Length: 136
Image 1 (tube, rainbow, N blue to C red):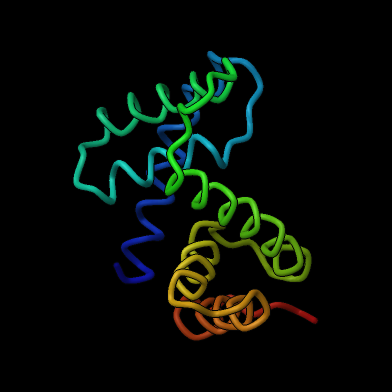
Image 2 (image 1 turned 90 degrees about the vertical axis):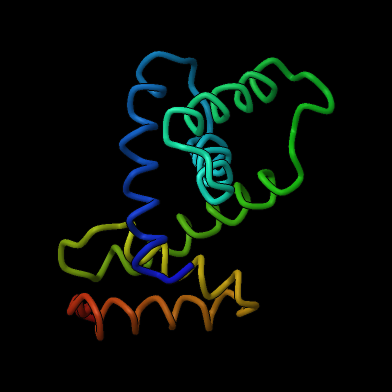
């Protein structure tokens, strides 16, 4: 999946997470996002992906052993890492769509880059493709 497609999918994920977040107990957003993204990346339509993410969260929130999917859990960890890494870009960048930086970082990490090179790749993507240049 290319960075632009992943960015669109992250944006969609955020839109579908909002209603869940408003109607359910506090939770780590990255767990829901990971389950939704995993379902969409496996060809499920958005309504089925939302339902899958809800079921995944039930297992986490209820503390039911064995209800956590390893692939989804790994993606959730990567999303949490991505959020933490984005903070340093966010602090010095002009207004931008967070999902663009996230997508570039996630794609670089999925392609095997370590954290620092992935962040540099995301910064380059934002500068070269989105014309968002931080003031460092």
